[in-house]
Length: 317
Image (cartoon, rainbow, N blue to C red; front, side, top):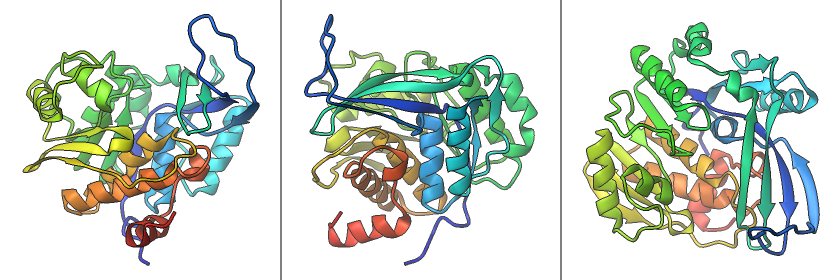
């Protein structure tokens, strides 16, 4: 099979964090202190490095703008990225903070919850981006950003990408708390999950407004050409470019859902950057993310193009 993304140059701006993983029989409630059945430490990343690893695994030429600490956890992550063929020359080695890390709680059905301390990522500022101007001028066709960075830094990155002529800019507004509810002219695609979409639309995160209403409210606020709202195992809702519809995803037994949204984001963006029509890009991204949840962890779970295409063709994971 071919590798359609090999000619695409991708620039990713976002956080990196390692992962402390606790495997439980149930999630803790307020006041709970549970004993984990198992524990492991991984160097799977936060949204920035997750999306970058996924893009690289799919064959794109990928550059990461992020930060790690001057510590063993950071060196291990950079070594993994280097082996994936990524350009990590613009990754900041923080002096003030350690490499970020998250604590994740995992259940047997693949459900996950947790929190992340971004650590050295706090040293990524607008000034840092100005000093990395060369990263924006290498013929990139795609810029991906997320909000584990301060919103002003992510939005400045989008602005620099547009100034540099990068044609496709994507913001994954997660977490969504700090994004200003204003038109965002430097962004082409907004990819919230359902609670984030409702929050950004000025609605209750657990509301029951129909998906079309939520998407239209988002479009009215941010004036973005394309909104893709992810819905977990229910697929996604797409609004823009002449389409307003729900797409289902394949049904599989989930092993680990962590990082699946990042896999969806990178895969969708690569499809669009590669000139695919919207429906093909969405279906590819849904299959890539679904395939990833049948495997453990985030980085090791991300598929290649050949694996995704075989899954689309045969339905076998």
